[in-house]
Amino acid sequence: MIVPWCSQVEVPSNPSLGCFVTHCGGNSSLESLVCGVPVVAFPQWTDQGTNAKLIEEMWKTGVRVAPNAEGVVVGEELKRCLDLVMGSEELRSN
Image (spheres, helix red, strand yellow):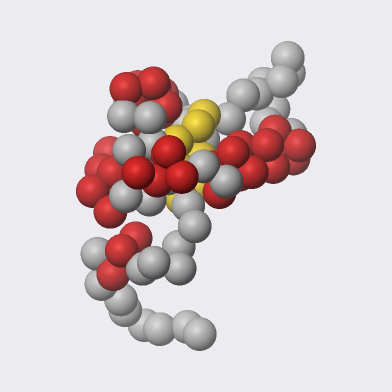
């Protein structure tokens, strides 16, 4: 379904949402935290690395992808993170 507008609060609050795959911008990081949605953190630059570190190490509400030696996050790594996040009640309850 495509809608022209939706409430920014309704999307992360929907119980059918399994997780966020996010670049860890300030807004998406806080929305996921407030709504209790676990995160696959995929930071790119600036404050996003710090936000990803908070998500994974301090708040324990997600996992951060690990790039390979060439700096690329391969499909297997993304799958590993998705499996961890989707299968963890601990991340959801934090």
